[in-house]
Image 1 (spheres, rainbow over the protein chains, first blue to last red):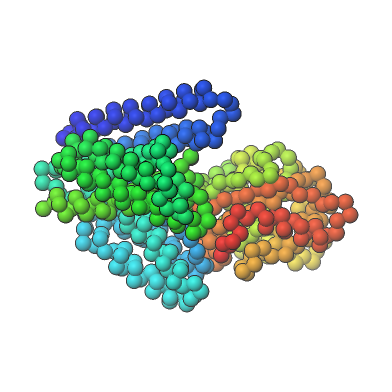
Image 2 (image 1 turned 180 degrees about the horizontal axis):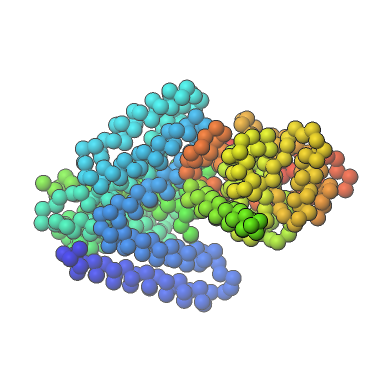
Length: 314
Length: 220
């Protein structure tokens, strides 16, 4: 903990400053607005309140170090997997496979994170679950919409468990000269990617003219994307003191992570549109479900993990 | 002694009910959607679709603690009364009302048993399909109980409740639930219209319940 005390303090003060100003702005807007409040303002306040809760939860996990982070992200995987499976088609004969996804795949994958067994961590889901889950489904003998069902199961564990588990797995990397400070990598990833979501939204609202993928999302614009990515790369530079990266490298890494985050949000929107829903769930007041908040992190985490692993570890 | 017994059972039932509601929330994140009715003190019959043993736990988890304490699920005696353990679970832990689907003795008449519970001021949870629905149909035809109860006690509100996804969480024959998100949609109360025939009313009640399904296109 000690080597990071200084950085942690700056982080907490910075986050508090951002959240307090957001709450003050929302409070003043609501106070001056005609009553009853417009749905946009109500939603803004709900979203900011939810951010308080999320920041507190992550900070608490942060202070518990590796066990805290591993447990927190296992719970996030649980919530995300539950939303994913709820949304997709399954049949009565899938019961045991679904149970296994919650009861075996999540605990085992996070146990691999915990023990830093990198070799199995990277292939357990893409190789073993990929092959064995459809085998179990076939053994049950129910072939109705078979490919659709097994594909949905694969996607569910890849997105909600495999990808998410790369966040706490950052703690297992050995970056020379950065020992004992890996938690800060998680802070860097989460703040830039989630910050990028907010910045893309703000730039889109302010300057958005040209829709990027109108059939997928009515709110994603080229202006929002370019402005958001530029601003979050800059945020990466500001946060480079947390990381083993030089300021320029931090901009590049943040850019890649946030671009992946954008693609994650786009894919999540396509899935939701295909399934005919607006939100993944209702876990986080004002935001929707866990996946509505985590979709960008899901795509960013594995790429960020492997970027750091390839270029910065021995 | 009897007093002790009674308070032991009350404690057992309270602990069970709070525990099951917490479990239902942890597994399914269940939340009520009041779409046409509101929580109230009025005496009610909640009628719902039925595909899983978890159905009534989910529905009760959506009620306030006070309402939950006076609301009893109606369950089949030929299933829940079969063994001592099942009877203990149904009657002593869950305080359900057991009725015989095939009765012989007039004192076992389901309607008179349910009416006597209503007359004590309790509310009921009723599954008018009469059994867990295992077919591909979203809802089986309703049996007559709902009509008979409402004819006899027209002041009791009939609230349709659509239970979403529970058949996937805990299908018939399974005992370990899969965590999936569930909602319970509470619709506007319905009543028998003057001169309405039994079958016409039951079909209308069924249609009303079906119409509450928030995602009818994908009832798997």
